[in-house]
Amino acid sequence: MSRDAVLFWRKVLVYFLIVFAAALLQTSFLAVLRPLGAVPDLVLLVALGAGYFCGAEKGGVMGIAAGVASYALGDVGLAFLPLLYMLVGAAAGLLVDNFFAGKFAVWCIYVFGAAVLKGGYSLLCCVIFSGELQLWAVLWRTLLPELLTTLILGAAVYYPIKKLSGAL
Image (cartoon, rainbow, N blue to C red; front, side, top):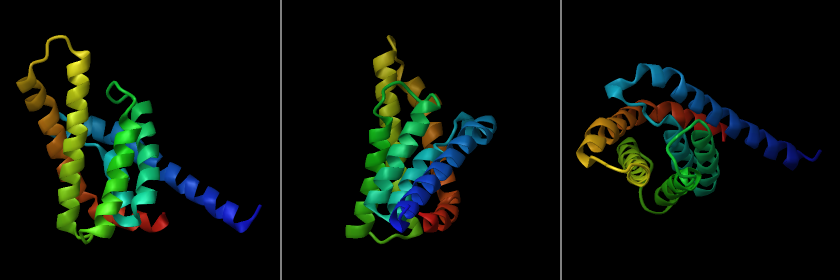
């Protein structure tokens, strides 16, 4: 096997291990802990972090892997989650490369934007799959707690994700 092929498969393995570890933490530890009554989206943060620290291409690839893992673990309804996560990872990479420097405050703004996009996706799924939707209850009990916990976790995992991005 050539050196390029070995490096390629090493990267694929590293992507898989990072996404698997994030999905495992999200579905085991964070699902039991449930701060504010919601599970923060660690897998989304991994996709965002790949784009933010490694560029649009790696962010898009990690986003697809993260979306497939999140969808496979039973996230909400439609199969557009890999596309959403890919767009989050790629957009973060493009924005950092072309417009905004990669600092902690900018990271927090990106986490907020990604969490709002995921909340909009979840709201769309609630509207599609629910006959009688009480918008205020969905916002107050589901979307707002998930947004806040993802923001808090996003601020907390900035430096670990930055360190992990060196492996990509």
